[in-house]
Amino acid sequence: MFRHIVMLSFNNPLTGRDHEEIVGMCQTIKDELPGILELRFATNASDRAHSYTHAFVADFVDAAAHDQYQQAPVHVPLKQKVAALSRQLIVLDYEA
Image (cartoon, rainbow, N blue to C red; front, side):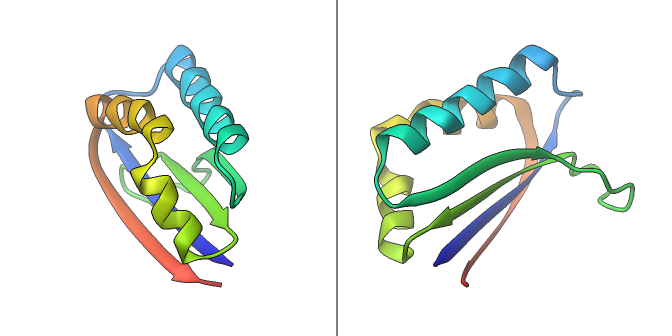
């Protein structure tokens, strides 16, 4: 299994509408791309994460499925939405 974590710091607090749109995009990606075991958009419950309020946590069958996800056209709208809203992000990828 290959895990992909992206922690996000947004320019402004995320609206409910934006949150739901991102969750919907995640579901679309999961439905359309093979090799994704799970793709979650989570709100951070910790008060120790500085300005990182949300994260994507994705599990793939292997690194090749992750690489396919990164290049997939269905992933583009999510990347664009996050780029428009976020101030900073941190990525952690690893074999689990």
